[in-house]
Length: 131
Image: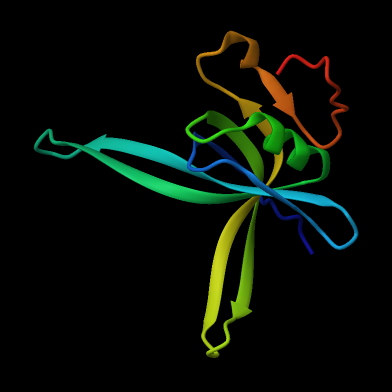
């Protein structure tokens, strides 16, 4: 069987503050949403803007970093993989959702001390790290 590729890179604004929970084994998981805008001009010159919303999931150290440093409306770069989840509700209706499981996060925006800082699960973050 051949190799596959599942990689996603997005830049956008957080739609809400991150929410962190813990699995029964104590592993942290943080979720948040990101809005990505796409602009284009139609043939008649009219400008259009389309917003796409993405659900983001982070685990472990990256989950803790996202919870600590990210806030609503902040611009971030997210890299990870697409994952679909399927479930059936109490009424028997089947549902599917698509989310990005992040492996890297970079804080973007106006604050110069935040530029070019990448967080990944392998990165050992302590209080002296300049986020």
